[in-house]
Image 1: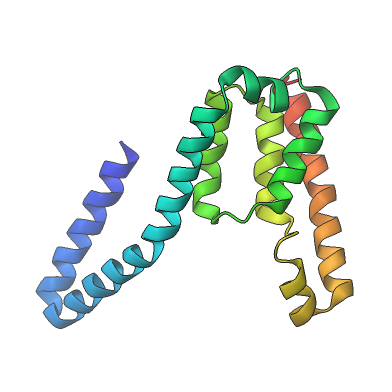
Image 2: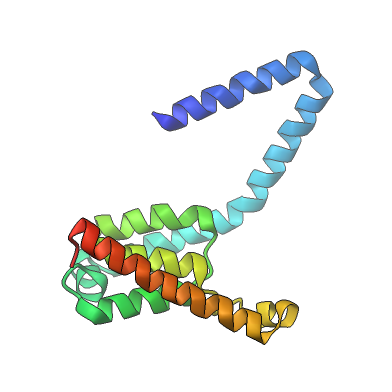
Length: 161
């Protein structure tokens, strides 16, 4: 329902813009299409990867690795996989929902998403080059601690294991 509302509002605003300035409206449409086409390869790759992963990993496998009863190792695996993954931020929430729907525990999925968004093991060399080793280490360690705090809060507030 929200998507319908957002698209309707965007369409109405586009019509309004076209009435006010058709040239600007054409520029906006061209930039929007260009932005969408730039994101399409990334989105397609991630959706294909998710599809393959979910066809290989059964619900039982996901539950045993990062399910509610996976224990401490489930949290560690979720944080490590999230920390080394390089996935665009707009994919993380749907990916987390897909994991939960396929057997992952809520707090494990929350840890995965938090690590995915905050910890940058793959991007560490670039971060170190531009911002320095001390900053890169401090930021990543801080994000690790925040991820752990986030997991604890989710675990106790939602009653997840």
